Length: 216
Image (cartoon, rainbow, N blue to C red):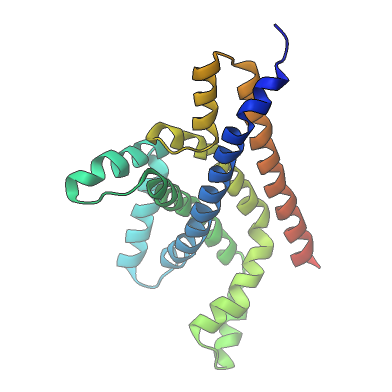
């Protein structure tokens, strides 16, 4: 048996629909991970010991728990405590909170690479802590962490494949549906691999462009 192009043409709408869902969920989860991760990083460097401990516990628990277990707890365990969300919502929140632990550590390392003298000088000029973070620390931190940040986004995209197990109709789920209906394996999985590769290459390209921009 040869490679069946007609099979891919017939199932292209299903695969592309799943690809679109994957992109949307990764974008939303990535945005959530960045925002929460930034607060986690600031918490890890807080002058308050309880805040530091709380953020450290969050990071260690998230990094020590497989993302699939986290998704199961939210999707299947949530209703037992009155929290019922759609599979897509669980995917966004679960991946976002999971990724935030890694982004938080990346942000923390970036912040700590900035000389403390700059923040002290800004305080002498009368800038508030929020102004120092937004105008001085974050811009410099981004120059340092963009490669690591890009790599973490790539990892997040790859891990999105597990969302198929909680019935999210993303690329892997729709590819599996195609396999089950056609009993073909080569064409569906090659197509899925190609689409994931395209998405990851797009992320790497954007990351490289941003890195060039901030360096100049």
